[in-house]
Length: 284
Image 1 (cartoon, rainbow, N blue to C red):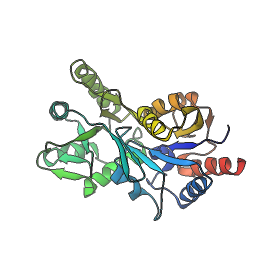
Image 2 (spheres, helix red, strand yellow; image 1 turned 90 degrees about the horizontal axis):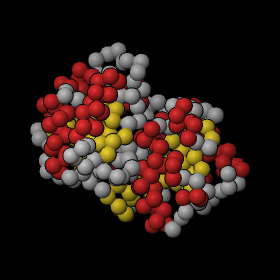
Image 3 (cartoon, rainbow, N blue to C red; image 1 turned 30 degrees about the vertical axis):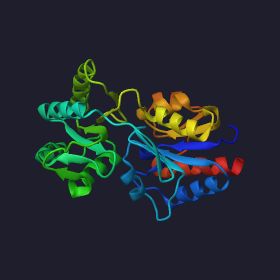
């Protein structure tokens, strides 16, 4: 591939290892790419407040697209934001409670929230041992939720929210929940995407990682043909369809690998992104 003008990187399963950390090597190669004149952006389902908690001191990128394309920051400047109508938020929370589905709700600023009275749902989902169907990163994130890294509230306040995240240890239960949500889409405006068999996320209708990237490209006057996207999961499909060159992680599902121009030699837990970007840097 020719030298890209910008690189868009997923986090979980791509930039992060199985301990949900950005390694020093990955930070170093990103620094060098930026010094060479290439923009480096993060595109993630995580909220902005979570991103830099996973990285070494001094970690920097040129911008962040958070909540699967709902909010975009170029440097410290917020350049776009898309939020769920509050009547949709209320309706989906009621449905989740009725179906005993664990949820996390992402405000546009600050930590994701859950009603305290629903903690028992997460406790049931997190009974050990960890099922083989659940990815280690996702399990550890839910453990962190129980340790208090999310905000437990008495009642969800009327505020602006970018997305929901839903989790179940049981893929069959998650599929049933996705079917319930699909029925609701007939009269409620929202979109859905999954990044594993154990989750689904509800977002603003018509918005995703790909639309978020396009909003950045419009701002920066860069063509999609001149960008590289790296990801590992189904919520990366929209950016793979947009980007001029795409790379899937070795640990990605076969369907995602089939969409990509290239597959990394190593997994996310083997610093696959670092090794790929180092090769890219040396080739320039």
